[in-house]
Structure formats: structure tokens, C-alpha cells
Length: 38
Image (cartoon, rainbow, N blue to C red; front, side, top):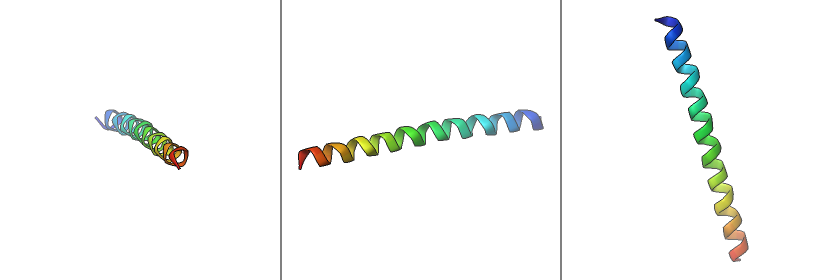
């Protein structure tokens, strides 16, 4: 039970990190587009 919980926490942490990376990439792309339109 406990080991499964730890594994699930590790998995959710990886998913969170992946989503965060995607979010920052989207932000960077939006900023880049803003600069180009200027």
C-alpha cells in the first residue's frame, strides 16, 4: 500500500513537471510572438 502511494506520488510529480514545462514553453512562444509583432 505505502509503496504504491510513493510510486503514484512520483508519477504525479513527473506529470506536473511535464505540464509545467509545456506551460513555460507556451508562455515563451507567446512572448516571442508579442516581440515579433512589435
